[in-house]
Image 1: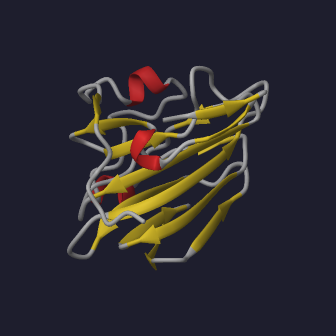
Image 2 (image 1 turned 120 degrees about the vertical axis):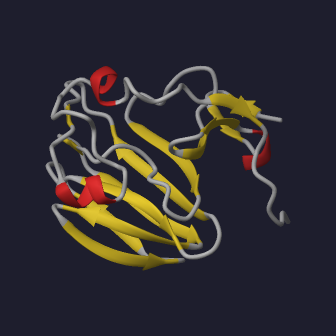
Length: 163
């Protein structure tokens, strides 16, 4: 249940909008009826070997916090293992993607700035290709980058211990 008061609100993750993708895991939007105009906030739950999206870069800052599990960060053709409580800052122009690692799910908190003129680019990447995170062709169009992926479907929140 969302408790809204004059624009601000409180929502429990289990009550937020979840979407399941065979290719990119489960995703939770913490926004209600309208997108936040300045900052996007989402959770991603990815399994071992599963990327959270296509390898890309933006003209906006993004920040990530690994809440649980393990994953690999692919950034500017470098690979780095991450574990719970590792924080990643990507200034504009850093190509990146996360790939689940280990034996169970990885939960990522993702926060991104939304500039008025938002630009994305999906480059060719040998490293991303090895992890199944490269788009079929370099493009600035998300529709082209994801044209081979089935759309996600609304789902319930994943089961994990709750307080």
